[in-house]
Length: 211
Length: 303
Image 1 (cartoon, rainbow over the protein chains, first blue to last red):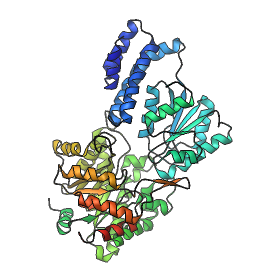
Image 2: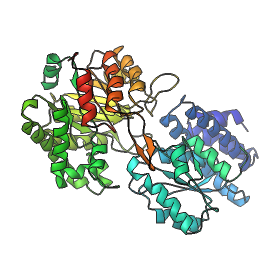
Image 3: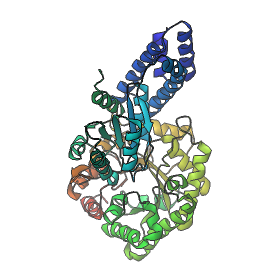
Image 4: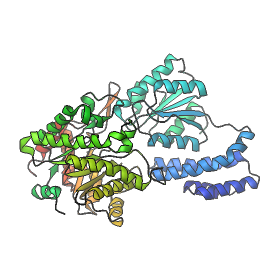
């Protein structure tokens, strides 16, 4: 397969070209898993550049969108071959907070790195996180907050998970503009991420996936 | 350009903009998940008091409590249908506060216009036309309520900011409009979260033929990081430059993020923005009437 072409078209967000290259790689007999891995490498480059502030939201969104549509082509084949996602991550902006641009970027980055993502949206009650964790069996939850007044809801969510006996089996990472490592520690979160690539790294750490 | 903003800028070399509204409302009891702009209807006295406190502190410019007043943003609280009433009331409350503070009658009222929370096509689903329409509804109500000018603020998308400015000019050709973007420091200089530099933004304004009455920056990571934004703008435009930073970076206290830069420290740092070329300076998140009062005192000799 044209590894270089796949990576490059993903990095610049050329959706159509990426899909074309993915289709022709499949025709040439490359495995869906191998193609996905090349795209994940490409997303790694995007994450790295975003973290270094060499690229910004538009570039990340375009690359993620290209990857999402190319992944759609691979999905049925991956499912047939029994290939599983890295794991499932539940994400959401906590109760009382209506901001979701940052949280959605985290979601796209996670997907782009091979995770299954359940995006609960914004203004999500602690009960909803707990219920979804129970239903889905997800082992990681990402909580987002942009306004300082909604930050106590992160603590409430973690407390409720504990009450429901899910601490230990579900790891919680927190993030958002006013959120810090210090705050994460003070509310008993399992991790803190400064940005979307950091969240991917945390999720991998939680699930003990080799970086 | 001949309007109340240019007249005041001609009279005073430096205008002081008021401080935070949102964090003041939180101190006044705004609950989590409550719509701040709805207080224009339900808690008008509290809003008037905040405006009066800033006027008494010495602010030349006060901003209405309408930051999230676009119908789109209000729809997140199920309040889109009340957009006109909420914005009109916001403007009227500021006007009443100015009226009651006799000796500050020269103060200007800027209608605050913040982001819709949506991303424009092709990154998001909002069309430019729909975005302009959103802002037009809000700005028309602000003008009806009596604002002197519009402050488009805390924008990260230059396209969205320009949409708001275009909407303002459609509502009233002569309406003074200032656009402030929020930047963060990067190795290559300040950029918005969309990657726009101050220089690029000025270029976009001229490419698109959008006439504004001031440009600047607000919110973000504190006054220190704003100096480079102001310098960059000064280097590429003759427009009045606006800058109002947060009271530093939020710090953790009892499990809550608080902005706790003292009025003294804030004033020292923010005064440097005037040295760098800003002609309208004030405060954003975490600042209080005391911060603005200190800033006025600190700059008394230049004004």
